[in-house]
Every structure is written in C-alpha cells, then in structure tokens.
Length: 46
Picture 1 (cartoon, rainbow, N blue to C red):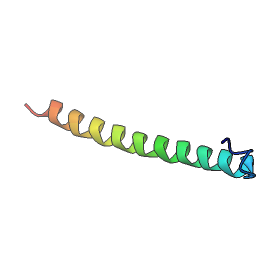
Picture 2: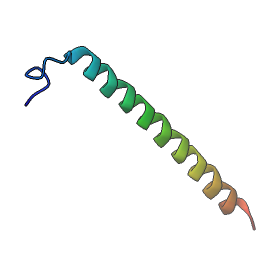
Picture 3: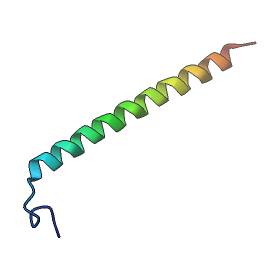
C-alpha cells in the first residue's frame, strides 16, 4: 500500500518531508543556541 498505489501525488509528500526537516532543524538550532548561552553564562561566573 504505497503512496503511488493509493493514487496520491508524490510531490506533496516530498514537500511535506522537506518542510518538516527544515522545521526540526530550526527547532534543534534554537535549543542548541539556548543551551549554549545558558552554559556559557554559568561558566563565566566566579
């Protein structure tokens, strides 16, 4: 029961995968930046 067997277009699925990958990458970058800033602030305190 593939996507072509169901008669659905493959292009829209590919675009959804690309959009999801970009969104996940953005979220990972934001989390990484947030954690880096928190840890770097904690390390500078005497």
